[in-house]
Amino acid sequence: MDTLVYGNIINSRMHHKNLLECQSLLENFRILKQKYSFLKIHGFNLAARVAAYNSSAEDPDYWKDHGYDIWRITYLKNKLE
Image 1 (cartoon, rainbow, N blue to C red):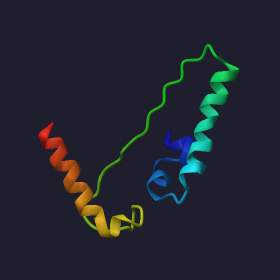
Image 2: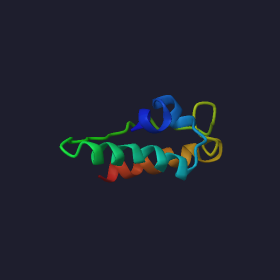
Image 3: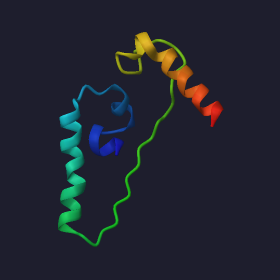
């Protein structure tokens, strides 16, 4: 999914595409299935990591203000599970 929509895993972290652009790329799966209905299509994506600090150097812009908070929420949620 990361490659289809963003080009690769790195771009999936740093992209500036809007929701409609991403959805239009995902439409390729629907078209493929319509043409070849016998295909079983399995899609997955990768969450490479969640940085535990506020910085947008390798992450989306909002990470500079909320990176640590996002990391902390995911860390605590994982501990509860």
